[in-house]
Image (cartoon, rainbow, N blue to C red; front, side):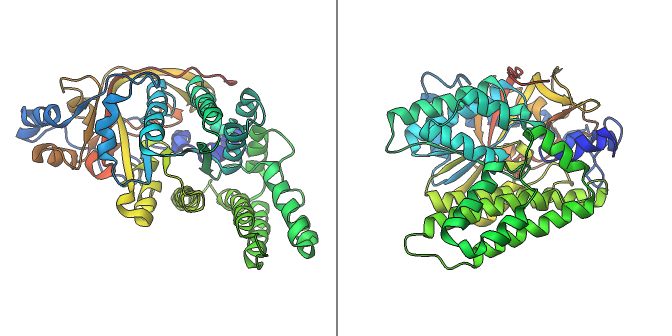
Length: 462
């Protein structure tokens, strides 16, 4: 297997833009995607009514700085009435303004609306380590970030997320009886401590299963750093990866089948979920990603897994959740046919109106991203929204930065939002030859528009 293909398999778990080498030339739509909207606009699109309607119904956003006054977010709080899970997207995977705004919104939801969990597009086991840090102070954040934010997830090793996690730890020091929590909901990696937890639990509660479980897990737990493990796993023959998925499923099935002892219900549920997370990784990496026909089923599985993990956490912790991911994942309507059903769509099926999706848009700015040719993280910039795009019209509003409830916007605005046109949809890799289109009103409930964004400060290895 070539290095390029070895990189593609783990990276696809964060963003399909890493597959750009196999996609059409610049400006062409993804295979099967709707053709980009015509540059010609309806008369009312060119007129003042849409922009004037945005001006009348949007709410000013004073800053993305997470510290200081939160009063301008009261309007957002009213929009989120009844929500138990709020999906908050990002239009790039590497811009500080999106990350800082997530911190700011989470702080508001914690302090004003009783939310207690921040959930990130990050492996379950990595989230568990960070949760131990924010709740118990276990470990050093710098070490945890270096060890867990690796491979395709290394984009999260930035100053803005370090600031958010540090704030969470500080909050818990002042509120030990009512802590905020951190969870990872993704399936791209399962750390060695997860296998150890399951085996230790089995040895204590179901000693008759210790031998078979130990044998089924033999040789599966990572013995290298996370990034190296992902690359080496991707090089395994497909038959071996599928055999490993069969083994991890057997452990999960064994745990599910056990009768819980007195007072053991909670521990049993958590250990079964840990075993499921191990199986989710093995199952997700058992697809043949060299076969284009298998990419969409794998991405559908991934979004379903991420949604199910979030819903499991909500049920078992009783906390309301801010879910952080790319716009594509938190949306209802995918921007790309390689994502046949999104995490947001699965969550809407499960929660109905108790799930709310917030998308981000921006006019211009910079971001960190993997180079699609060499997988090296660099800073890139786009200078101004494309003619005829969603962002070109959104940026004509008199406010540079604002929040818009698309469900209650004036009729001409809602009609405009329901039409598909070119949109910024920048993932983990750049340049991306695909021109994405979206009907924003069908993708999200609420939109946060920023005029100018800046790249995050990346802390990891390039």
